[in-house]
Image (tube, rainbow, N blue to C red; front, side, top):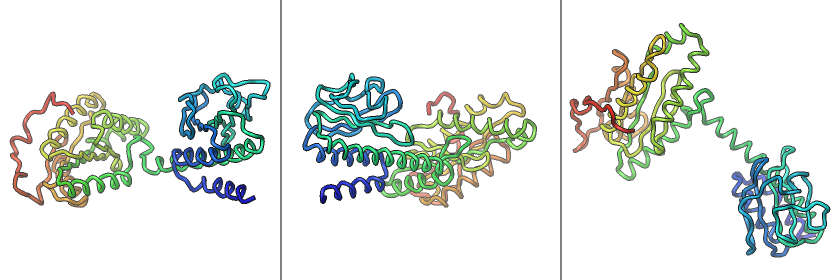
Length: 329
């Protein structure tokens, strides 16, 4: 009775785990104790393939199982060597227990050897709870992504961007490394929206999101700032290099969007650490002022005034406005 209560307590605790990795590894550890040391593998995946997510024991298990080769996955019931139908994937003398959640087979638990019926019943209870936990974890992950992503462009939203920028700024200050910020505003967007309708305007914003995703580095984060404004944080980037990147973005944007009616261009304001300060508010103030100046003529990149200048950060204006055509992002 004590072991059963302990198992039930553990099974209930699975719901408290947040990640799939935690759920799978904790479940495998418990299942290993239930079957007395036989090798256990927990597989998760889609309707076609299941990948080995966690394992405990010495026996070699396949890294991937085709769902069509697993009777437990096909019928959603326990499959053992005593059954009429046999799994094609498993070693001789093993059992498969389906992990079901939201009326779908989310994975399987594979046990080498033939566990006693009592152990199989307990493993079925465990598999049921793992299924519920995986559904819950995936739902929470989906909600977290939705809460941090702009639904129209697929880019991080402003809330998520603020978290990323503050983290990058803290790292920049701690390790004395440069970080830059670009604020971008699509020129003539209101006129385009009024002329072509909101659906056409939404299509432009989606295309801008794709453009930024395709023209930034992996370490950069591009986000929708609001309306037709976007922002990019560039870690480990001097403000002069960020200006050059902004210029290249502006020219490539113009080449891509200038054939629309009315033609669309982009204005960009640039700031950075340590040139403009070290806090998000300081960088935003500097980049926003630069963007305001750029918007006076449009289709322009402007550098924010340096509120904090330290030796070595003075910038030559002629260098910032030199041609950057052909430079790779």
